[in-house]
Length: 177
Image (cartoon, rainbow, N blue to C red; front, side, top):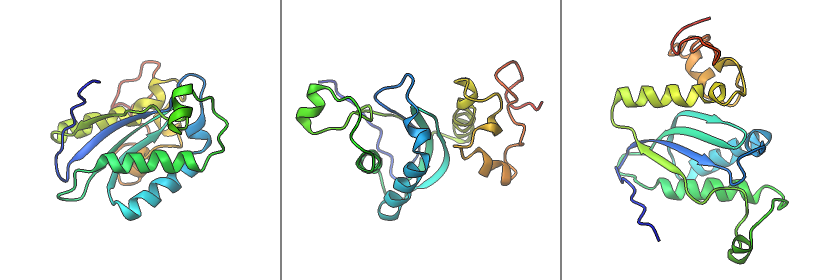
């Protein structure tokens, strides 16, 4: 079994990518975005964390979260989010023999990707990546057109311009229309 090394930084700020098991043609997360929000709220009540950025796409999501001082336990938070979401959905997905034997659902990839944010430049780069992702994947032409994103909160706070990043068809990241 591989030796997965995780960086444990108490109170750190992290970028995550979490994928559904069936990536192509799957719109599970956007179809149930309200349910996902509800589960995240429930987990945050018992295991607090700050959400700096979040985007939900049909088959995966990216987020930047910050743990409380002294806390390193993002793994429990993801386990509870994934399990809570899965339990609230009817069991209609295809499951492998291995997943059935383990009593697992066939909704999420087992692992996720995490990156400890190092500094302000790293934070900005990951926030830009996260918010531009719906355009990158061809879901919308403009970042502001994607409803499942904290981009709108950052526009309201004056951090991003409403026309930030233009479109995938050639406008420059950071530019307007």
